[in-house]
Image (cartoon, rainbow, N blue to C red; front, side, top):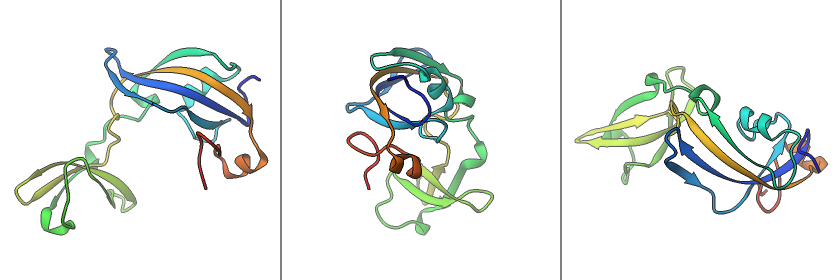
Length: 158
């Protein structure tokens, strides 16, 4: 079966930086619903469209096509007293961005009574190389299409 609208694609992937340094390698395959549902990056979906099980490729993405450019407006400092006990570097907290919308922030540094937060995705501003291998392609179920994501072993579980 070819990858196309309303198919569930199962794949293995590795993410490297522009110099080839490995950033992440998935241990278990992941599945996503193909067809513009926002379940993977658009350039990755475009590279896989029309392909079949066994297809392998590497997709090089500029920051704008991956996790965006860094937004220095998403850096914040907050008084440590405003956080619950146990705040650690690397932890994620929900906060509000400059527009007042709820947004996840990562604790990047704690210095004295100040906690430094970054609301950018950790890979924002980076050129990334995705090495992909398609391990399965199947037709999506009506429920998956309605829910706009893959279900099952390597997809979303309810």
